[in-house]
Amino acid sequence: MNTTAVADPPEVVPAPSPVPPSPAPPPIPIELEAVLKRMRFPYLRRAAPEVLATARSQRWDPAEVVRILLEEEIKGRDEATRRNHRQQAQLPSGKTFDSWREADSSIPAPTQQALMTLEWIGRAENLAVAGPSGTGKSHLAEALANKAIDEGLKVSWFTLESLTAHLGRATVDNTVSKAVAKITRCDLIIIDDIGMLPSGQAAAEAFYRVIDAAYERRSVIVTSNLHPSGFDSIMPKTLATAAVDRLLHHAHIVLTEGSSLRLTQATTGQGVVPLNQPGQSASP
Image 1 (cartoon, rainbow, N blue to C red):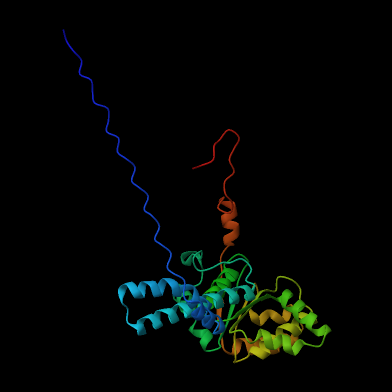
Image 2: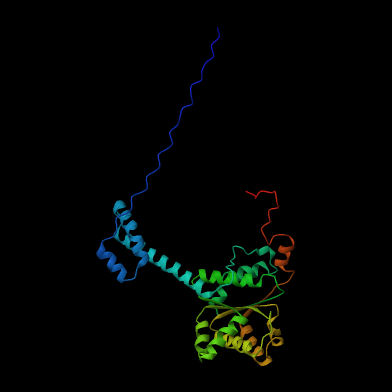
């Protein structure tokens, strides 16, 4: 009689035991924490327990411990400064060079690269970007602003309308000079989309005040669908001429051309996430 061999049950491999978390480093002495609070070293104080525990276990040189702790404080302060500068700048949409497509821009690549160095800001030179709507003017300006903030610089962002309103409010309580001085304490000032709406006397005065105060002291970026030489067609000629004269004296003029990138994306379906049709499941 034939007998059928019975297979042994598969060996059960036990699941690996979870790795226990590393024990938390001991807190720093209360006296040291009080000193660090008084000296206002919050980032050093936060890093101290782990750094000191590692230093004890690896027998670090005391000078190395001091260096690492101070570097943690510097790093924390720099990050906090960048966060504050970005919040104060009030940039409109968070565009950076990460989403900038160099090949799609009509601006020559060497010019793009030279602007990205930000060396021109150190020389208090200006940038005027003019061209049709949708050709990347505002994106370039905001990407440069974000890069400047990353480099530790202070930035202010306005449209001509928001700048006019800002200085208009200061006019009510006679603090226009203070408001302009605060704006020009920034390393880079952006005035976006000049010419999109009609500009009257108040807009021309606001524009002139900022350009005049920044002249040869701070860098200004202006973006417009008009060449700056045509600003006298949208604002009073005397103020426009005086402002543009100062703006362009030490300025790089960049002209964009071509069809709207926004319109191209819209007509090719790249401006939205595709909708799921009834009966279709969402893509994984």
